[in-house]
Length: 276
Image (cartoon, rainbow, N blue to C red; front, side):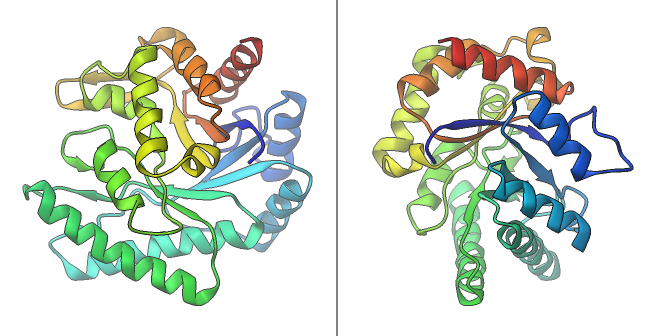
């Protein structure tokens, strides 16, 4: 990637539903935004028509990522659910790769009352199966477990960095709002954001900052972690210091805005970033 791109989580709210992606990319162009994250949260359903529209938009310079279904748990107690989870991740990768997408992300697992090392080994094993299958199919795309917002979910920063070091095409998707919520209010200062970026660059390599995928929104949280997303200006999320850190570290890739007012906050953060 040659710069940091600002993209919306799904189609902008102003999209004409009848026109779908055709309208979505026109809205993004009018707002001077850089692309979108396809939201396959309820299943990977992607028509030929939609696929062509997204592919054409990517050829014109838009950046497109994809978010896998919510029904993923690589640490399920039921083997059939693990297999279904692996399939959902691979289907997401196939759909994104086939249109020329940049990256995919997903929530990998729940702890299920097991210790973190046991869960790590399970996630690592299933990721090995996933990455082997994708490699054998010629599916070459960044595959990214996302940092999660609840303490019951596997996926703190250290766990995902550790996993990323095991596979050539696996990198973190850093959801800064999730980290802020997961840790009940920390990870919200310039120095804390810098610590996150420094850890990624040092432990994985600078290529992880040059091929970055992150999420940002306002967020409500409790001691148990994430509750729901908020508009940035209606939250305590210190997005200005985050954007300063991203610029100072030369981060390139895609930053996905997940605020409820999607394109408004996406435009807000892009304009602030460009003003720094």
